[in-house]
Image 1 (cartoon, rainbow, N blue to C red):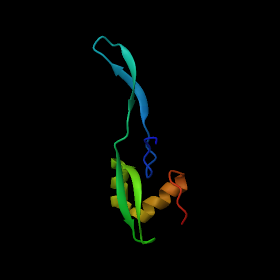
Image 2 (cartoon, rainbow, N blue to C red):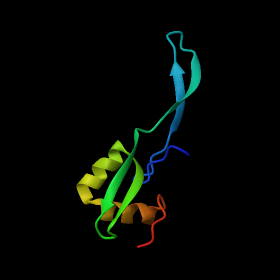
Image 3 (spheres, rainbow, N blue to C red):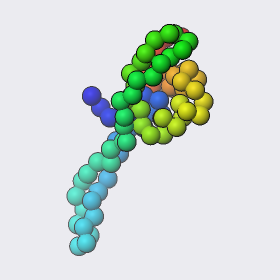
Image 4 (cartoon, rainbow, N blue to C red):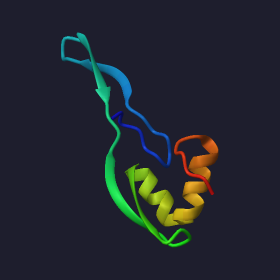
Length: 81
C-alpha cells in the first residue's frame, strides 16, 4: 500500500541526504500517516481511513462528511454519496 493521505492527497516526496562533505544520496520524505476509525453519522457506519496529521486537522475543522465530499471530488477516495 502506498503512503497517501486519503483526505488531503499528500504523498511521499523524494529528496537528498546531504552530508557534511556535501555528498548527496537519495532518500524519501514520508507522510505522517495514521490509520484511524471514524464514525460517519450520515451513513451510520464506521470507516477506516489512512490520514495524515493535516488530514486529521481538516476533519476536525470542517467535519468528516464535508472532508469526505472534498476528497471524493478531488479523486483521493472512492466514496459514493
